[in-house]
Length: 479
Image: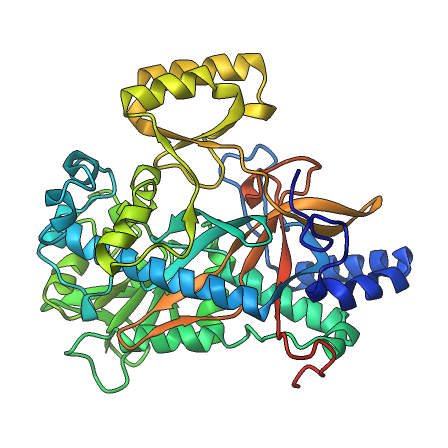
């Protein structure tokens, strides 16, 4: 049975939810429905949409938004925060090692072929040392809860994690719609995330940069599914939003075309995958990147954030080694647990997975967005048989995990309040100076009853995440 975050295992309202529970009981359903309609109108007016590649319907979509916030007590958040910092530091150390001495490979902890044959491994990065030795500057760590003190990392997003604009816009909409709730509850703010992101990027400027480094956000363009977020973040940080054609390289230095002439660029927050960044180094047919960018990067004249080659940490087979990676580089036990994982590349694991396919979740090691995934308990016989064929054909491309009973939270739906499964994506910023984490994150919701798939591309929704100070839930929100 799933853990109910509002009512707990014993059915009694948990302390952090006490005020919200009372408020929900006192608020008529038609009033909640009216505010939900207002929220949707706000999102349409703002224009916060996304597109699904290959969608037959086409066009832009609103992600479903639930108006009942998800709550975390400060003591719960502090435990999670410490685990997130430990994990991202270990990810940075691991990536630095696989492009350097490969001590973890020599120690027999991570197989060498899993590194060198990985599609995301970039040999070029063995020659390049990023600023401050940091590779993952912005991480989105997906966390699920299965009990009162039972947290698991579901996956690490170390390449180009998205979704932070929804976290910020969700909070803005909630603050406008429910000022009485904020007046009751001491909710920690998240609106300083753009400032923290800019400070992180500034701290990573190369040694050759000016005192005030020039930072830009590199986007593939308006047709990208996350373009709204690119535009949103560049606006909030007060930096230029550029496409590849707006930049050029001269003398191993990156410049931006402006109406006042070329302007040097020191830090590029890229939202383009590695293979499209530089047609001279990667795909020659890419029109999205900047010719010569990798040469400027190798010369130490520009910082690329996140670093090229960080996608190796997104690999779900690498994920399965994370507890050992944390121990190896930190000398500590992991504060956050991994989901038990069978690596189908291993013969015994494959045999087990094939025998228990109807009980397991199977994922592509390089998959994302909920695509290419099998949820065994919800699959038809035909789907199970088709996936078994895939596994036998290319077992190294898959991992399998038990079907976790994800926690549930209350959601306001067409037929009233009901529980739905959720996960949480907190955003971790790792600069040359320190790690920064805003208290909260993007809660993603499986809007369909019984579903465990929270990805927006698969019909999932979002809700605001409130970290509530423990001292006094009745203290006013600092305006």
